[in-house]
Length: 247
Ligand SMILES: NC(=O)c1ccc[n+]([C@@H]2O[C@H](COP(=O)([O-])OP(=O)(O)OC[C@H]3O[C@@H](n4cnc5c(N)ncnc54)[C@H](O)[C@@H]3O)[C@@H](O)[C@H]2O)c1
Image 1: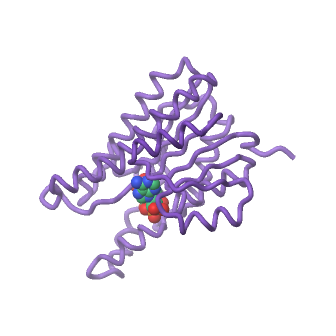
Image 2: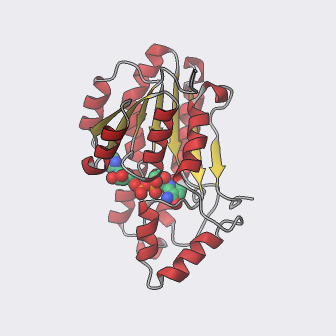
Image 3: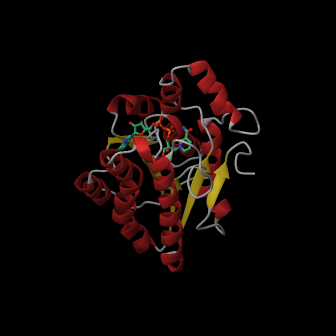
């Protein structure tokens, strides 16, 4: 029986845990050959062991040289799924220049490096598909204490639309996914960092009118749709998946 991503070669960043991991697994379950990349080799090991069509690679997406070397080793790339991201907590008063530069480096420059080095392969193929993980906290919504995070996530939507416009004639699509709160290891750590984690958890849940947070697997389902040919008429769009947060 044919699967939705049969014969597709897909590169996933931040595949060690959370949304990136769930998406790498969902892509693999739909028949894709997946290159799962992350800076954490330990978390990648599980994917290597349990999923025969996932190859793992330790890759820091903010390291230009390493990204270029990795990309040079690839022959065919049908889909690039960019998920690297970091949440800085605070308003402009708590965000110093170092915080600003760190978040821009991790959240947006990583995507710039990945796309810049992989898109020539897609241009040669005259086909390609790029999916960038943004957030509802971006140009879609402002929330307290997400100054630099929301700014970088808005930049991802700008990047997505620009790539979509520039390469539409090359049959390259580019979309963004904009999740609300999702149950991932980094979210758990964010909750634990509050003085009152029980209240913090309740507040995070209350942000979604559905009164729950999302799962990485739900985000992965949207990613499978955007990675598949079923969504071939869709490009340049930020797709919310947020339990009603953006209504
Ligand atoms: N969890 C949420 O509530 C939520 C909501 C909206 C958007 N997002 C976005 O989804 C993406 C994934 O977040 P998550 O919460 O699923 O994952 P996470 O934060 O739990 O894990 C991030 C992964 O990225 C890896 N990583 C960090 N820096 C890296 C680098 N420079 N190069 C390669 N890998 C690196 C880490 O090792 C880790 O495995 C992020 O871009 C995040 O901003 C998350």
